[in-house]
Length: 225
Ligand SMILES: Cc1cc2nc3c(=O)[nH]c(=O)nc-3n(C[C@H](O)[C@H](O)[C@H](O)COP(=O)(O)O)c2cc1C
Image 1 (spheres, rainbow, N blue to C red):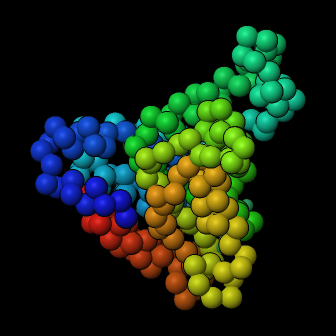
Image 2 (cartoon, helix red, strand yellow):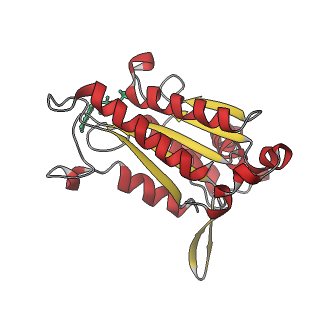
């Protein structure tokens, strides 16, 4: 937990506004309004807005508007100085710049992520391929790579049919460890996780899974804001 945010309630409204004003909600479920990750994440963002009146919320829906897979022009553009890029390379990198600007502008990022085949959906992987960029979100020196995206809080809302936070399926979870690793690589280490799991299991099911996720969300928010 970020210590300074624990004292937010003691701040005057104006100071609160400058403290946390931009919330980025990234959705990646193709199931639209049926999506459990989206349902829990939207409720969480609603609670954040209540705690931070005037907060600006940006929603990026990767299922509705999937970033393209990175191609030849994208990769060529990465290793070419901006003024030397071909029009195709410039165009291929334009969305990457937009997505990075969106990420850098956010104070708190809520990622709503369904598990697809033990990992995040391919649309979210495509977003990651667009935002992990040398010179913009990660720098390299003789000391090695260093993340450039500092001072962000991330809440991962991870929806799964099975249970992966504990038990026999835990080694098959390539969703949370991967997201923690890649976000850490670009400098984001302040990460909380809200599992929405056991959705397809008769012993748990959607009602219990969502109730437990909502309780976890409230717990996180009570510690943060
Ligand atoms: C293509 C696909 C692959 C899936 N793979 C897994 C999986 O590997 N493990 C799992 O527990 N659930 C898996 N599921 C179930 C989803 O995680 C579950 O339906 C969850 O509710 C998805 O989140 P959403 O409701 O936000 O879309 C898969 C679903 C789909 C559509």
